Image 1 (cartoon, one colour):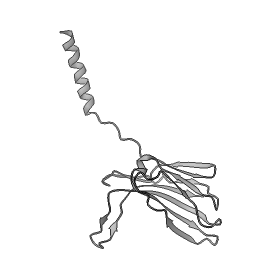
Image 2 (cartoon, rainbow, N blue to C red; image 1 turned 180 degrees about the vertical axis):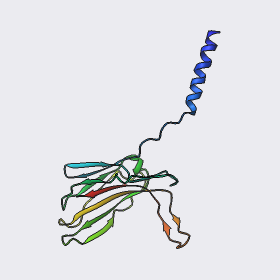
Image 3 (cartoon, rainbow, N blue to C red; image 1 turned 90 degrees about the vertical axis):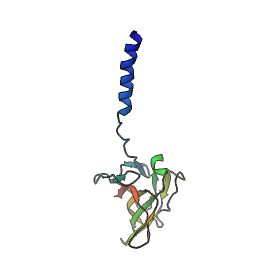
Image 4 (cartoon, one colour; image 1 turned 60 degrees about the vertical axis):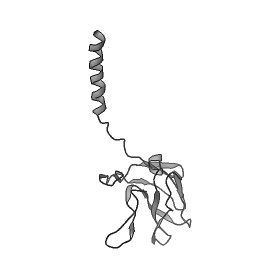
Length: 159
């Protein structure tokens, strides 16, 4: 008889634990490295997979000194690498003229890092942004063009 009485409260505790929800894991972070210096960025924007719930963190962009001609190593964790991602960046040439470019789009599980190397040693990096793609592209109902939704982004401001 004592075993039954003991088993009932234990079973009740176990069942109660099944309904408890754990907090979601923190969003993934991206590491930017230039020379011997590195910095970890949290997402400036982070949405669930369906893009129905999004969080924006205006304080998330990070700053790292990147001397002209210095490559920047971008490293993403598996949570980002498991989906398509790319790096969008801006730089200024020796005359100060800004240019916007982007890396190739890296397919799911194809790589977890990329080196951003500007073409001319005098070019100065201004910003770099890792963009993680969300759901598959959909045609824009007004233009018919494919839209590639961005689920999350991590921003580096080079200083």
